[in-house]
Image 1: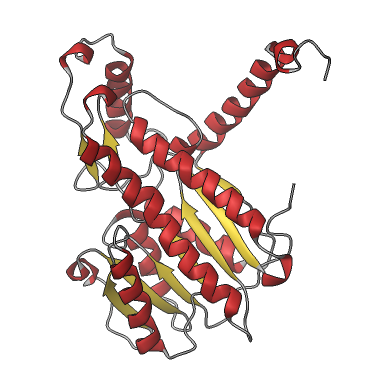
Image 2 (image 1 turned 90 degrees about the vertical axis):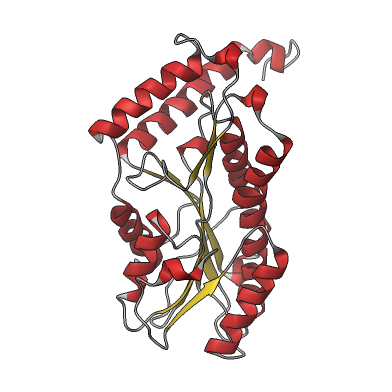
Length: 299
């Protein structure tokens, strides 16, 4: 299997960061952190650029519209960055953060709801990633870069009531791992799949969409209803929830420490423990079907 991120990544002192979904939450905290570094350049994006008013006005900061579901919008955003920063513009670090959660009874999801979720979280990540890879690969003087694709614990563990959110995050994980293995080592293009657990953001607000409830799943002992109760109790108490500023600081540390970039990065004790339990459980399941998997032949 082709190895990934084989060399230490050295962040340029004047690196340009391009971040999607900067209107709130993790994206806002990362943008705020980068904007506080006078030697760094920032392309901060959101569907509504008025939500970026918290960022200072500076030649090193570009605040622009970007709808990741629109190829034309992505083209326009990269063109605007090139106009602002110069013809040799390319992003040293890209953070694909734009997205929202879709929850509810899967049987009642509409075609529009399921497609829009995949368009935003998966295909939006694909579009921005590959546009960035092209620029990182082609730049002659400073070839290379780092792409953080924000996945989630939901990209590792499937739970009831969030099927299309899980599907999009699982897709981001598979896509990122595959593309990372396509990179030639000399290109020095690094990928990091970020897998936070619960984060203290307004994800329960405008960044969360709900499928219309299905009456067949309404009773309290249904798995999704039990999970909702547990999650709501945890959110109210703040149990296992990560500060978005801590996520921002961690990603900046990974980019700037001058070491090899991890392909996967679970964030928070809950994510780390559940990820480990997932993989340990998978080993047990593999052992249980060893004879069947080998079709009667010891492996």
